[in-house]
Image 1 (cartoon, rainbow, N blue to C red):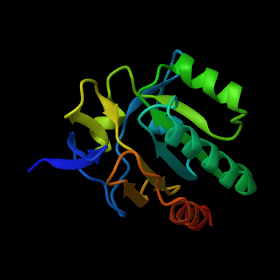
Image 2 (cartoon, helix red, strand yellow):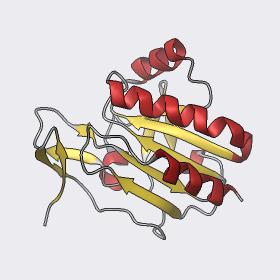
Image 3 (tube, helix red, strand yellow):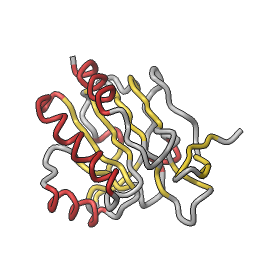
Image 4 (cartoon, rainbow, N blue to C red):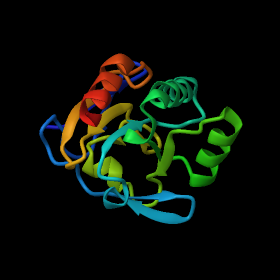
Length: 171
């Protein structure tokens, strides 16, 4: 049975399996600039993965800014990433122009492995592939401690719950 969320009220189909708390965080290969990055390249500490369709939209921009601001108090006890299918150049331009200093970006444009492995790739229902809006927290041991797939892609995630889960994972 296909997993779905809605995009502006219309059902869209997601590739991959739904992650839940307790699952091992799946591998992926993304891009930071022109360098390949994997889950294994992230530090073994609490990590937040904020998944957005495109940084060039209002909700995605706000989501990245809210998490960037929300994690500043945690300092280097956490690592945080915004993941999208935007080209790495567009991600860098966005972060520079918006003053995003704490969040790092991961582009899944190359092979969509993050989207497929984390169950966030919108595979059917739109004229192009995008990632659905979601938030994951992974602890230092690589276990998912928080997973939120936002049911309507154009809505905001639960920022407070995600940040509370990140703080708990950082202890």
